Image (cartoon, rainbow, N blue to C red; front, side):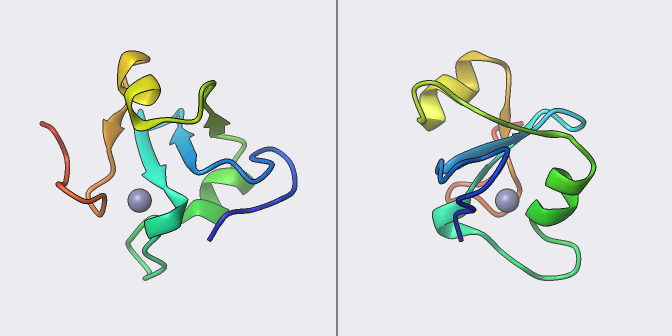
Length: 74
Ligand SMILES: [Zn+2]
């Protein structure tokens, strides 16, 4: 689920600067040990990408989160 407020402003892809993982909010998993997007935001570790694409996230060194389609790349 995309968040319209700060700091993600409705963007689809959100990076966790702590773990260098990128999450796809259109395919977010909300279980206890899954994406934890709100926890990332509350910890101040959420960033977005410009452009808002998975390729841009990868170019900045972010790996897919474990729940992303196709899974982690390493
Ligand atoms: Zn995720």
